[in-house]
Figure 1 (tube, rainbow over the protein chains, first blue to last red):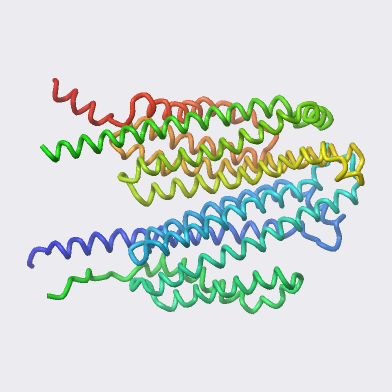
Figure 2 (figure 1 turned 90 degrees about the vertical axis):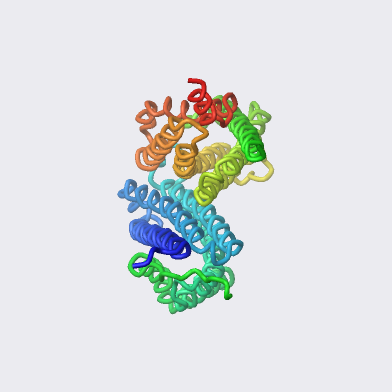
Length: 245
Length: 244
């Protein structure tokens, strides 16, 4: 066998580091999805919207669970930002500036998410720990708590905008990359569009979440699909283009 | 000869960068520490009447504390950016990660400072809130202080996380002793333990006290080292070897 040329060595190096990055991004993304889903699942129980008294009882009973749910939501946000960074490192060769743009969008979303989460946890624990809240009667406390929950709900609305926006440059770069399948790029763009529709729905027609349910499968397949693809299939090996002589 | 000049030039630039980064970081530490002292003078977390009284007595101090914290976060971000510039040659992507993680923490801290500032409105803006009793307004103020306080808890997750790439890059750099890199990574885990404690067992802050010396030495030590020694650790070693 002939010795490897310099170009082949460079190709090997590039492909190995790219494969590692893809795997890292995939694992971070999957960890984010799992943690985020479980935090939603854990936090789900206390929300009995039409019966504040029952909600208060739920919260008092499961304060530690709520705290764990909250903690996993914030850690999920950290993982999401790390995922965006790993994807940035992976896709930078395709388009440096656009790659930076999607990290920045993601960062804005992460910051908003953390702020929402902290307002939300306080709203819930307000009902649990009332040692210093005796100036208000229970129904006032419940109202206050619902008010804070509503506030963090509007935060989640803003969040949707940024978490939708980052998918457009991401989807475009995946589409153009040449080492990831084009259909994943298209799916991510559709996912971005779906989140934008969710944003408009939350802004203009609050209370009609039903309208956006048909979009959920797209969002799920796009994000879960990307994570799994990166882990299982990784990236296609690529030849370095040599200038035509 | 020209190569030697270029190397010297590079070392001088790096040295200046390192000293600047250390100085900005020290300024941040001074600001955040004085904020902590001012806040502890005013806020008694378990006594809302005393807290309300303290704040109403010295509104100016409360405002100064607020400004100090916001300026501190600004300085923190500046320091991080200087570290980014300093460490970019060691690892471009990881240097960016360090800034991103820190920026997330800074954004959360600044937002939570605004919530805490709302407590002042509750206690002083009586026209606005005449529908509530004094008791209720004091309670509201404490509530906002506590909501804002949990913002610091969230910020700690990110303030820990950025130290991981930072410590790693310092370790790999070759121009800052590896010791500091290891200490910074240890500092990261200390902050994560603090985060977990304040999330899950908010009443047991005591548990994390043994970690404080590590965090203090890591953060102040790195900054002081950079200010005093700059970034020519390797070169010094090299010269020592040459003279032996």
